[in-house]
Length: 257
Image (tube, rainbow, N blue to C red):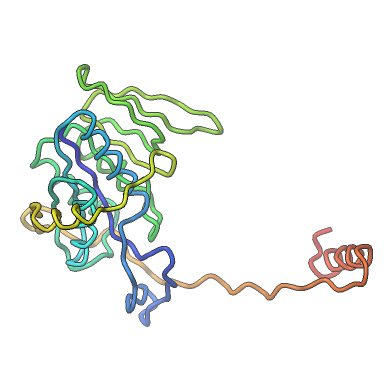
């Protein structure tokens, strides 16, 4: 099985995001970057299928030079090779990102493609579906289980729908987007980290892939959410007094009852 796992590098989920001086971007000073958590599920599933069926795993990412760190993390987890589509900007619209990924993936053998169902920074959830369309392969989003029938060249994907589960059977090659519940991503071992330094990492540029950047999406303004009002501590000597005061506040101040 030749498997591709697409990943995005995003700010650490514990990072406090601040709006930049231009009001159209975030302040990137002192931000720690990590592999998008939803993409980790895709990388892990690709590795598990490789371990079961054989083959190789290629990880692909779009972004500036710092993206190499996340690609090396995936290589340390067990991926065999990496492709970095090198761009100066991280503010690339989803369709252009999908075009860059598609151009890179079309140049290599591929039976399955995994993408995180969304990125935790822009939260747009569009790249996976657009990439499947550009690759002209079937696509199922939000996978929580993936069973591969290598002999029949088919895959059965389970996804949740309104409190239930639905199973989809697709012919390979196919693309799936991944989410929490599919697996538990492994940590990179020390031997894996050492081996990752020697694994192939190929760089490609948008011009060489025939993709033009920019123009589709313009950010007009980024504004932080309004600050929440301070909470109130209900005063009273007894539970009954506190309950009465709570009802009064809900009725007279909050006006919700």
